[in-house]
Image 1: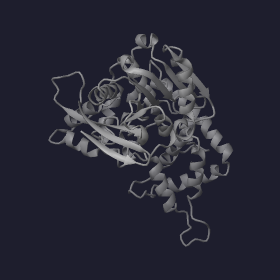
Image 2 (image 1 turned 60 degrees about the vertical axis):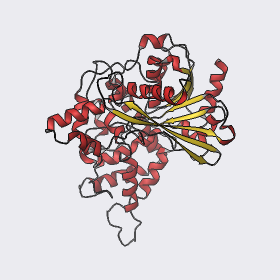
Image 3 (image 1 turned 180 degrees about the vertical axis):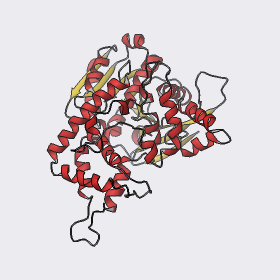
Image 4 (image 1 turned 60 degrees about the horizontal axis):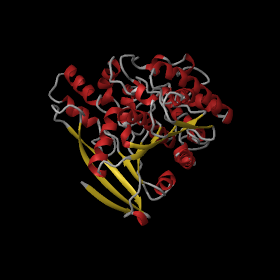
Length: 435
């Protein structure tokens, strides 16, 4: 099924493809739908152009919704038809929601319901997403080869794609997402906690006046009586989770201006030690998962490969100086922690199933290390020297292991370099040099 949209300067065609929930098991009748959006400039809509599949970051993030030939999409459209894939479980690709969890639990005893929910969620990882992409390539594009652009988690997907179907790929571009080929979540989070500490130090140096303000906000939250607009009681540790934004180019400044609105000015009719409505609305929006619960649910599962799995690795490796009663109060980073499934209304329906996923000790292998070592598909990757999410040293170790990889190491950009900088232009030039 296809639907055409006309936007300023571009034509967008939605393709909906039905795929198995469990690829490779013809005995399992369950299916889901996957949406792939084909974007092309209006003036070249009839031309035969190379294809570029965008692999979104996440997990649990839907593809961008194009408004025209703008940003990195505009850059890509100068030479490609761009395919924006809503990864399974997100956007319009059979989204996984609280209602999904309720349906899976219906008419089942609690333990059986949890097992059914966890089994379903286990089919939304990189291997399944790659198989979905192959179904789209075959059914929509007649089996034509394509290039990929993987942002963050999209780089993990790229490595999984190269492990399984290198024959489908003309070239691969990666921005901030060269994953370790032998994932060790505990080692990763030990590394990223240290990097997050460094980002906190940078925040304090940039906005020293916010140290006392942050502590003052935490003192109010510690009373346990402050609620967000959605009714959740908000804790200091939720305040700390604002630190995910420290990994972005302007994140420190966004956090600063949010804190700037925390209290009403002196002399206001309601200027006691109560947090402002504007601040609480901003805090809820910046730290919640209402639009992407799968990000939290699957976050550590994207590192699970084989039988070397450590449950709740971010929580297990959290240093003492990130405790909510430590001072100076430090922001946490991308870490997904158990308390989130207790305190956030949108995550509570996923709590039991997520615990079951974290308790699982064996997973399919994510990457074919031997095949990747002999890879011949051109790969160009932006490695952000100061990346808080995907440590540069681990990315470079992978680049040295996978065949035919060229890297651009830069401290000009943070993890959002694709969105806010000229990263794609640089990578395309690097790709052209190597061809």
